Amino acid sequence: MKKEDKSAVIKQLESTIQSYAHFYLTDIGGLNAEETSKLRRTCYKQDVKLLVVKNTLLRKALENTGTDFSELFGSLKGETSLMLSNNGNAPAKLIKEFSKASKTKKPLLKAAYVEESFYIGENQLETLISIKSKNELIGEIIGLLQSPAKNVVSALQSGGTTIHGVLKTLSER
Image (cartoon, rainbow, N blue to C red; front, top):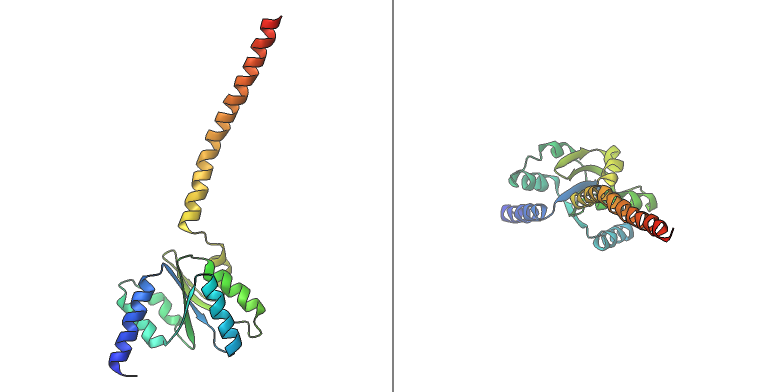
């Protein structure tokens, strides 16, 4: 590959990485053509972009983004594919489900950058699956904040009918 081609690929990778909020480094080596095609279709359906990349080009692209991704550089060994998503836990769920059905038990998680944190190693998969997105957390907080207000309003409404019933009974006597 010529130097100009490499720099073009690095620029493309850099812009792709910056356009997504989260990414996973995985190993899909050993999947046959049929399984690879099935994985690509699954990724497409779940809005996850799958790219097979050279480690050196990915490393240079990560260095050029302006963010310190040096913790991930140790994971750039062997065959590497990049899963990009704007939903933090979607690739983790996809990896778990697909590797269960695969004969080779792949894809394997090497590392991930999710919610501005680094997760290194296959043992982090369950943690990544349980991560909630910023919008999900905001929704839960709003629900928790609304709960006491709803209880007060319902108590006042039921109390109003109770008082009305007592007054009506007293007036009839």
